[in-house]
Length: 241
Image (cartoon, rainbow, N blue to C red; front, top):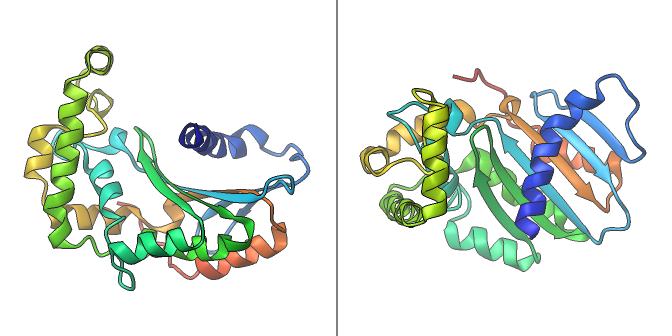
C-alpha cells in the first residue's frame, strides 16, 4: 500500500506543474527550480509525522531501444549497491538507523527513487538519496548478481498468465515501438548487457536537469528548500544524451 501511494504521488508530481500553470497553488504547495535545473515540488503537511521524497529521473523503458531494453530497470537495481563513500551495507545500515524506507521503481517514462523518514531525520535521508543518485559506482562485482536477480524477475513475469496477457496486448498495440518492450527487459538484452554501457547510460541521464523532486510531509518549506539546495544543488547539470 505504501509503495502504491508513493508511485501514484510520483505520477501526480510530474503532472502538477502542467496542470497548475499560472494558476494559484493550494496553501502549503510550492514549485521551485534550482540553478542546476532540478525541479522541486514542496507540499507541506504538518499533520504528517513523516516526510516522503520522490526523485523522478525522466528515463524509462519508453526511451530504450530493442537492443537496450531493460537498462533503466537494471540501473535502478545497481544504484543500491554502493557509492564513492558508502558500500551496499552502509547504504542499508544508514537508512535503517534513521528509521527510513528507501526504495525505487521503474516504469515506461520515469524511474522513481523514494525516501521516507521521520520528519527529524529527512536531511540525513536526502543525503543518502543524493549520494545514490549522483555518486553510485555500479560495482563490477555486483553487476552479475543484479543480472541474476533481474533474470529471475523476468522468469517470474513469464510464469504469470495475467502479465503475459498484458504484455501480448501491449506488444500488439505498440508494435515496433519501445513501448512494446517489457520494462524488465528480455533474457537476451539482460544477458548481453555490459556494465560499461550501463555506466554510460547512468552518466548521460542521472543529472539534476533531468529530474523532478517532490517532498511531502511535516517541514518548513523555506528550510526544506535550503536543505535541498545544499544537498542536491551542488551537482552540476549536463547535456542529456
